[in-house]
Length: 451
Image 1 (tube, rainbow, N blue to C red):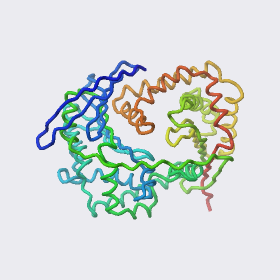
Image 2 (image 1 turned 180 degrees about the vertical axis):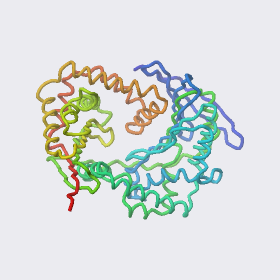
Image 3 (image 1 turned 135 degrees about the vertical axis):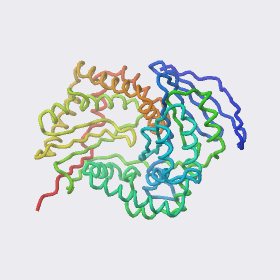
Image 4 (image 1 turned 90 degrees about the vertical axis):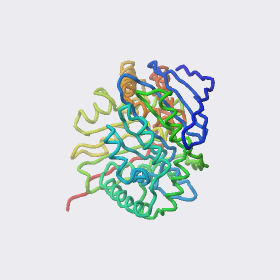
């Protein structure tokens, strides 16, 4: 992929009531489909990615913050999890200008769609799609809640109750509990072992002072990335961003190094029951190198070989034979795992599914997969990417996830070039190196026995 560094271009914008501030075009890239991706940065550290598309008068607007459950667990002033997700909810509780409930009402009135937010271990994002003629209203709304949130005791306590309700729903889902238990097995010292939602005690225990500290520290312009994909231009967008975000002050954002996880020397297992389970399920994980590693691309193709498409190995061996209703496999870029998860058909046993997974992994280790199977996996992977980039919102997600996972928003596109250089030997190599029994953690959840 060609990467062209432009000479810095400076623009001076003066907005009423704001000091003049400088922003620069810091990069420009031509993507593999010929589209131009532009990067800008403001003096306060706020970064903007713009990909103009004029086929339709719509755009997606996404704000990504480099903060999630891992950061709050590591922060010496917090040392708990749950506030990152709780704060995602608080961001819809209004400001002095747009009171509680007004954000949703106004975005609906201007034709907004797909408006939502999510929190993970490593990031929080906010997004919506709107008609491009409503761009300034969205810039105003998002910047307002980023800087002027109503953080009152009454609203904070009210939202705690809503989040505790969401936690209880999470606990009613067998697959969610299985993944929670898996992370506890895999990680013994890393904060990735803790669920993003936190515990009921942690959620109820957060104070308003802690919330204000979190907001000021982590929702700073130098800890955020704005992604706009769709019907606008730099000449239209950047003066608006300058007007509404330019006066925000950068903050000192604590970034403590994660503790190094000791090497795993033997398989770890957990078995449990769940009152809502109607059949058995299995989730397993192998620790692998991260998204920046050259091994990540072959692991992506391996996951596709095993579980994507009608000819995928686990689909044919498990789903088509009536053993399972769902079988998926693939790498998780953060926290660096190759995961397999299987929902068994009623009456089928987890042990049978595990034996089949072991067999399929052994086959890859023992002999090279065929050129036909390799090409199928490669084509499936490329097709998925090509489909994703046709959507403004999905393209924004690709850029945002790559940025918050690796610091490089082009990482997913670089993987495309890496795929083309792979061979079946690469899949065999990484499988032999990392998908070993002693490097595996397995969780089995069964239905509770009826009394």
